[in-house]
Amino acid sequence: MAKRKRGGTASENAAIDASLTAAERPALPEGYQKRSDDLVGFWQSDMGPIHFVPEEATVSDSKLEPHKQSALIRGVLVDSCEALLNADGEQVVGKAGDRVGVWAKPGMRALKRLAGAKVFMFADGELDTGKDNAMQLFEVASATNGTPLPVEDKRKQSRGHGSWLAPSLT
Image 1: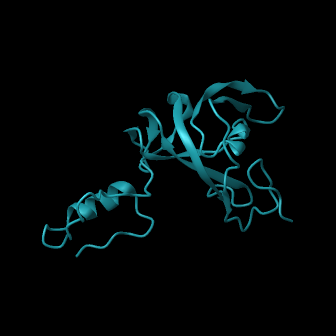
Image 2: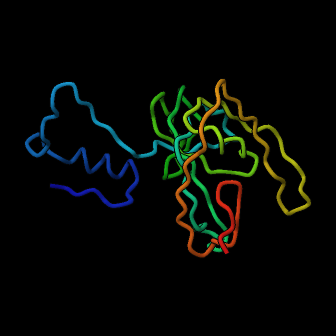
Image 3: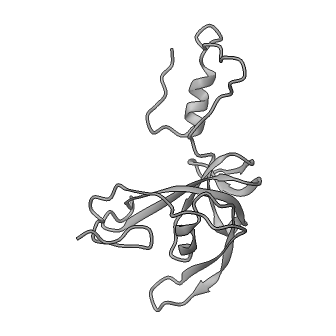
């Protein structure tokens, strides 16, 4: 039987799943359907809006600059979304119910209190902060209030770098 690769992309795991024969694959009980925690893709704000329900976030060391943090918000699409790239950088279309990732940016601060609420979000310009790069602004809208976004902190080297999702821990 083929084994899934830990940390493998959704496409890699799908290829492995497809390699199982019917004899190797157990039958699902009646009424059950396959579930997955894999992310279909990652939202690209320059490609269009997203309508999703934020569920949780993870803060970790950035792969590019380990002394800085990186945060990923995971959620479920409310409507289909074409503004997604998969782990291989290819455009994908997510459908309602698919799990997606949104890389957190300072202009998304309102998401901190919107876990469980339907959120419609899109890029809405930039703010010159006097730094090398302007801060991207976002329109974040919801019809209802949510709850605080649960955040898992996996930082090691960037614990001294705080953000709206995770305070400095030095």
